Image (cartoon, rainbow, N blue to C red; front, top):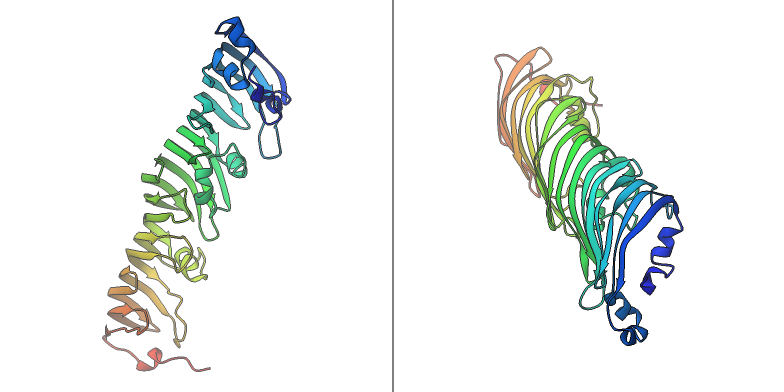
Length: 362
């Protein structure tokens, strides 16, 4: 066999982890005249050797702490002109089921190593998330996954992967989420279902349905240049009903699911990061019977309903109705943030004690 297969960094390390299985060679040949073969270098031997083989029922232990065991692997191998081809491989990697893995491994014209593969099957996202630092994990996904604190569930994958030392790794294909859960520092999404379309530069989705704090939410959008440090996000979330307390907790750090009222509408985030204060947030939401976490009032506003639209530093308050104490009111205005904040507004009420609007004294 080619010398680099027998080096510690090559196939010897793979073979040492094998517990059981069979590799059956169906053909093996060296092409060339005997005089030529005697003087062949390792590179010349690789180009002269051809073989076909079948792998049957292979089981292997993890090769390191950042890999998983493989079980019941079957497939076809061939070697020709210095390129190892693998076809129709199936089996399990950890709890992930591989239905068809086909591709090749060899060297480019400049001599650097490359590999490419098409992978079809069902992935255990929790296990693979824990393997994100493994050399087997597509490095293009490491950046987008950095914001996650937990990921679990299943996904049907149909991906083409390519990697070589001359360029960054590339991924293309589809991932269909099934009952997926993800958690960041601020958000937990459960029961996620939908398809991610992946190109070498963009991860996009037309529709992912999920549950946020027990309420339905629909996500769409994209991550551009996801493999680079300058990736950008364009994500829209829409819901017909979310607890006002959960929204308050998400944006203001206070509130709970027991707080009165609900919020419906959509939010769109565009920017280069997912941390508070980064990027641009816009949207239109309808408030229904909420009690906003406003401090300073002698009596808190209650049963607030109306429409709020915002885009960056501008917030429009449209036909906001509610009550303070025993007095009903209607409020409209536009809040502008920035270096010189302003809030022109109109406030009307059939009857009100002006004292309830004055700041609370300590």
